[in-house]
Length: 111
Length: 112
Image 1: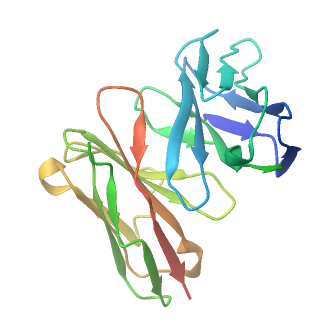
Image 2: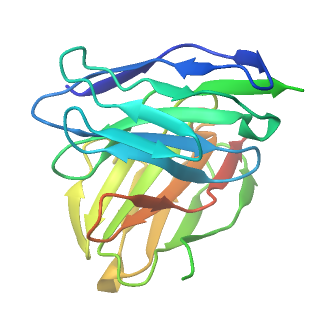
């Protein structure tokens, strides 16, 4: 069945460092791919999405490219801020819209 | 536009008791989802409704969990009787015609 695997955390970075959080998926057909973010004490929010191969999703300085050949959707940001500290979830959805999530990666950014 | 509303925000019960959670989706959203998020894991779908019909309940433990969406608007998720392993955050989400699912703040359930 469909599944999502994320790199294990926590990831601890200094402010202005480069961020990569790896995400790979297994799916039949052509899923849509998402990154969701959960800030402390808040609900899940959509960060970015890509709906077909080679699409690049971007938002708030974060980017991820849908790579069908490597079944990956890695999240990147060139310069992280303390306010980016959160839990990041990679997810995919198929035809029904049901989301399948990875286990989440905790990012902590230190000043 | 108002977001997805859930209540209560927190609930503590003893094992073998029953509990119910309520969700009001964004107005006009036909699709409603209930997810279970155990600490340290990603959310897992329990049930999906399209209007008032069930689309997917394959992961719902039907011996103790039930859900309904009468009139195709708000929804209730019930657990009876609760077990210790049901301690989790229960998330409701709704979706309109676009791809994005909008999540509510969740209900944190602790079973003691």
